[in-house]
Image (cartoon, rainbow, N blue to C red):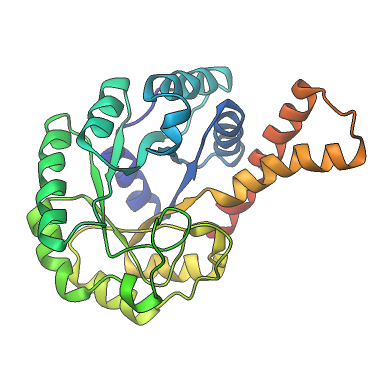
Length: 279
């Protein structure tokens, strides 16, 4: 089975009444572990990579790795390839050229009017290729942020939601409701704010920073039109700790192939646990 269009994946989620997990990758081992986890659960979702991590390779290499893993594992469930936190038109264009099937454009660092203008420009380009667009309103703290924000400063303002969605023509809205990237900070999900936003937004909502959010909160968030939740830090932690633990036990442990295979297994098991816990 080939990659599916992001719109197709969204319809799959609505039909099956599930929230779509979106797992961040960086390299082949993470990619293969993620896709193996999808196949083990027989549930669909996203493989995604951020613009910053694309600096280690490029979109074409990532697409080839995904295609290879899907073919090797005989994938028969819907998977989309998503750009996470796209920071420029060039990033978006290159990913579409490579075969990505879903795009996030993150201009949340800009003033609202400029954020709207840039997202709308990129949405028009993506929609020409029938590719859905996720946009961010508010500033989600943690690892992706270059500046430290207080909880109140970063939260999505409900008063901006209707205009933002209407003017940008985005298909998914990433919101800041106390969720944070990474594992260093503890999230504090503001469910009354999420409920208010969900009653205003005409498009489904996205939560970033899923690694730190309790599964029960993700399940609760589904009641408020949350369709996609991002996971990255816990997968990286599992993969890196595979090598760290082996080295601690034996400073002469250098069998990269064996350790990589173990890392892939740990990543896929983490994916399975997440997917079975949120749906």
